[in-house]
Image (cartoon, rainbow, N blue to C red; front, side, top):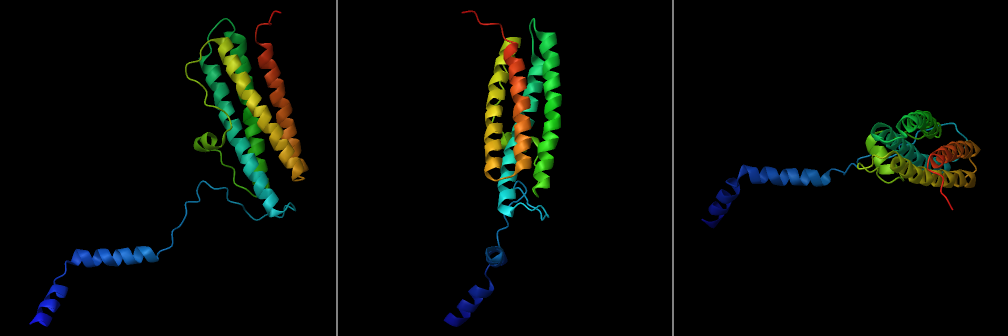
Length: 202
């Protein structure tokens, strides 16, 4: 009698319960596939630089790419929202600065790819990789925009100088020259911005 009851219980087990157990076992047996969509995928290349050097340089350049993308949009933010007596001159200056940054974005992205990396140029990438602070949305006066951009370009120059030293340490003269060029251009723009402020009296 007991054997018949046991057999009956087993046979009448809910089908959903059995299926759930089967799915759980199958899921446990499947390997977890990491999401690689946001990682820098390295490709094979005949570039003589060692793979680990190319990977480290690509990582550094990716931060730079994100920073320049971010800076470009921050300059556009100032270009669109500036108000005050200096509007015309600064509005045009900011437009020139943004267009200049467009060219630098392309050069940095291409260097990443030349090294065998993947250029990450999405808005989300810029947000994740930029070394800059978020541009405030409550800045309108011309001089306030200038001061804010001075802060951003100062941080940008510091980052570029660090990148130059990093490339030099890894003995990549091409990336070193790229960083040197970017730093020189950024320092010139920093000079333009600082010269737009009123002369301080002693």
